[in-house]
Image: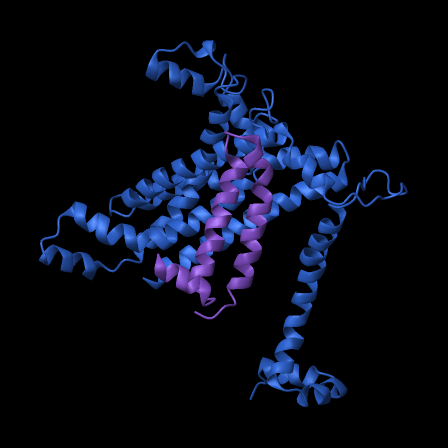
Length: 62
Length: 315
């Protein structure tokens, strides 16, 4: 876990890609879940944030 | 001595053009060849995408080209993301996507594993299994509509034969509970061969000597399957899931032919709803925002999937 946070602090690709991946996965789950409309409402901003983050951080050093 | 095709091409090139090309670097010549494709890609992919993003912030209606177009900001996105009907559509898509992928992967892999064994008539059986994939979705939708007929449909009679439930007592396409499963069954029937073919390619790429070494080490068949077969086929399987996942997220023709989104809205998938908004209600701005939401979702999923695929291949 500390390796992950170190990676985030030092702007390393692996850790940031992981964060972006988690955001996209949460966003897609929120989009398609049958439990709460409010989650559906916020799904697109979360997915968009994750996707844009993924595109940017894939240029970070390993 | 006869002239080679390259010599004849060089002779046919006008001297002025030949002179100009001779002065170019390798990199410039490469750009010269690639640029028509890039221009075409920009014209038919990137430009429409940017135009759709722009339209998604307006109230533009394609059937009223002369009407004043107002900038509405994020209102289209807000209306879509707070609409319970669109939420329902997403759930129907999720159901279809999850179960069709699940069955296609399980059945496709099992079939590939069985076909990979050498037996008489192997090629004939493979051809038979692959047949549904080659049919048009419109044709498949049409004949499955007949198969699902409660009075004359073969499917209902097969269910009656196997379970004892009277054939005319249920309608696969007319029942709210059964219609979502009806489209999953047809998609699975049609596209399992595709998954099977990709898995078969993966299974045939595993060299025999690996299994021979495992036999020497007295590894059981079960252990060989879980520690050798599955990890080596996994990249192929993931590729199949990626292709089918994206295709099923956009599923339109087959479901329109089978149920048209009904009964009620139980099989109304996102692409069908999008088409209705864009070309029946003519809310172009609204449907552009809807399309962008779907695009970002598929793009995000494909990005993480490709990353996972690369990791599996590196192992």
